[in-house]
Image (cartoon, rainbow, N blue to C red):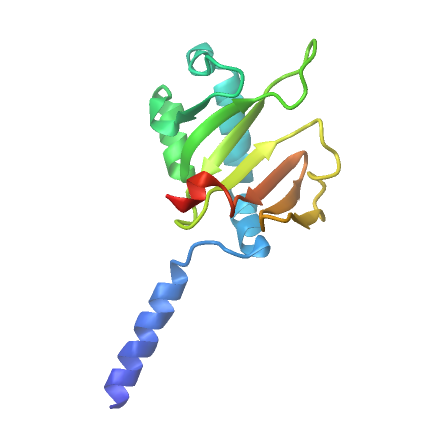
Length: 156
């Protein structure tokens, strides 16, 4: 009986080690561990003409495997399933937002983006939950992360 309990406890412990990030603190911790890699990936996409040409529409989204060589590899290592180019402000000299769709949790996408045009939601201490239960988390240095709980992609 003691062996059965021991193995049950061991299996539970091992399963919890590979747990997908769920709480805002867990998601933010995972982002913090990879922040420099996200900055490099954002810059690599912006500075690669072939990568930017993949976004042929104003709000285009592409699978991370569609990007050239090292960008696809970096995306995969960060758990990024898709990347989008988005303009939330349109005007002269406005750069688009590069939006990363992380597949860190199988139940819903976790969206990561650097937004220099929003000093409120990107502030480190910012947290908001909307009426659809989406959670917005300020990660600091113009970065924000959010759990997209109630979205058609979340139901797949």
